[in-house]
Image (cartoon, rainbow, N blue to C red; front, side, top):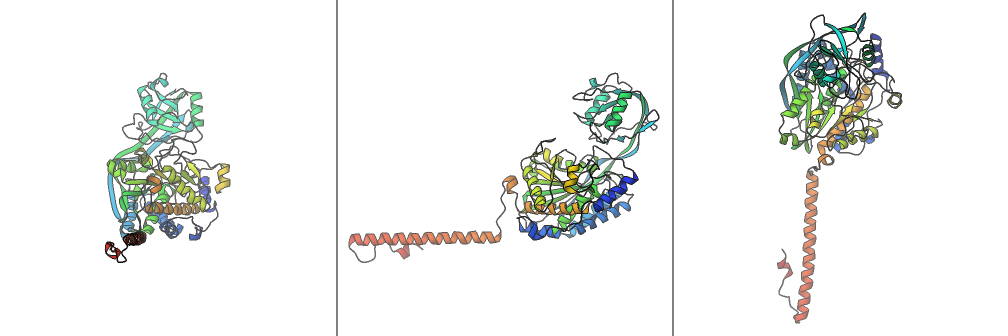
Length: 535
């Protein structure tokens, strides 16, 4: 998941994160078939087949592929290519129609990120696609943008910024817009400080949007700098080069192709680590769901699984995929389900807020998103896991689907956000600690997983994917196709109706014949013979 925040943690915190991963929530058995809510037989069967142990085996594979390739599975690296190969082999053997879709992207890797004010060193994180300073950095006075309703969103917000380093609060407009405004005001670099607790790490969105070196710092550090003013030294440098990476798609051979159920997870990690929670968990659970469903299941709607590349560089793979489709091809997609970080060590149980019932942030998703949210909530709560909503912030691969009007939903167990006391009481874990203290760090490894939360979410994934494979009628009005048994029953019912109708007609005609005979005084058969009139 691309992050607007980065966490820096000590070794002690990393150890604590490992403890959270294994001991936060007591181990519980997966729901038995009798404990599942009412639903299609396919969904009930798939939930029992997708096991936590099998999902965990895929996580072990991801860890080893990272360890064999420099400790990372980032797009554009051998570790990512090996991860794609691992999935492709298994999905092909399972009978799916598998497509490996190559695309170019701009690979970035941090080389230096330091900020010094006098004898103080302030933690700073370079933004994705930022320009680089010279080696050793730039030393210049600060130009502090006033804090108002749109801080740093226009060049006029900066007073006498020429040749200076702009310091601006986050909020009201994108990082790219702040970067452009500081550039237009003549600044040589920019620093964005948070408008809430915690650090800032963001993206400019594209190479083209980068005008200046820009990094993010905490609110406390930013406010202290703004109050002190003076001169700072800023060094932000990153490698940027064009590389090729891949999306991997696997579609069932069965089911209608004009009402496809899509489910996706990004496969890439950040460069800093193996990305076992972010997003090995979503990718592993999605893989196991696909393998247990099989390439030729008895579904009414085809199911298309997707593992996205370069998500950590700004949702590149999923955005490129959706935009490559014609309008008719987009219409063939009934809905999109997204799974990004579903085993965080200090886990929450978030479901994307499709109906905007929380009234937070971006608003509701396209029509059908509310129903998707309800499907996940109903399953999780029926099997004993309370949930909360999570806003469509645009930080994961549902973004372009929603932008094109495709209903979306999914699951999330939290990233750098802090677990509240109420959430700890509800789900277990530790209040006042990030849902994932190793988010986007080297320590996002096999010790950074809550396997109970992962198993619960894998069950929910299997249930909802299979249910929509049978019918999306509540999403888009497309009814399920009748089964052979239902067709035979309907045919028998129609035959019974026709037989009853013929019987009524024979009786009526016989009665008419009798009346005519009586009226004419003729005891013989009338002019209409019932047996000949109705075959």
